Length: 75
Length: 243
Image (cartoon, rainbow over all chains, first blue to last red; front, side, top):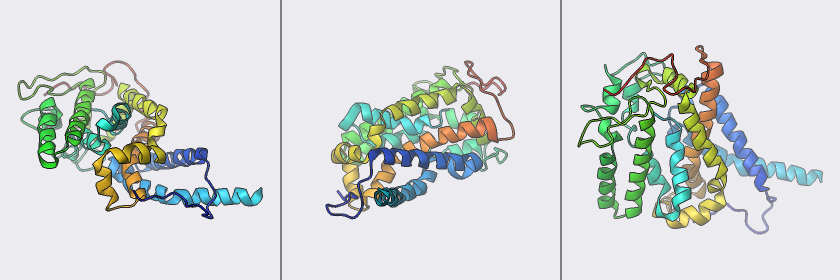
């Protein structure tokens, strides 16, 4: 199976699991907020969410990685 | 009809039944009764003013019509077709379970389903909330999410969130991927990111749409209905029974 896990020695700091949970809660709330304004654009079927979920997956290591590096630099 | 419950039920079945079932085929089965007909039931636009058929209830849940997709028989026939084409008992069984979950969920509205078709076109309906599909998607959304239908969706969402670990990457890698050849097939063609997207999308959509529809139905749209959790509600909608 292809793996998205950081390899040993990777520059990406370890991302706490609670951050991932918070990230996905925020992603759900963003999508829900979009739906309250444009329900016909995002709430007609799960297929409409596929590109958004793909982008949220793509962004997750970038956003959380940047936050983790920021915290590491501040410490 | 049920809304996000159809998106969430398959995840809980997978959580409870483990490797005996395939999540993608549970989802396909869950979507199958409405997948080709919702656009015709609701009409071509969100408002419900662009109707395609004179009697959406007859089309959706009756016979003549495509109400047979909401029968136990339909799930078995398509399940056997999947078994014949793929040779996978797991995929066939999963499709049947997903389809039956949808069918049984839809017995809770006022129209119900032809559960035992083709033996009889009798409709099993428990009238927990009104069927409002004939009024278009906009009005149906308001009616459903202000009635016990919305509570039904919340129950599934809470149950899924209680089992949130089934949506983690570790669970997918260790429990989902190794036990279903569908993911091996997809993994040869796509990255893990794409597989996780496919795995999680319906749960993501289900949870987000419940939150969003509730807010929209209660606060945003111009007809701001109040919650009506009475049996057979909401009471402002026209009464609709089996065709």
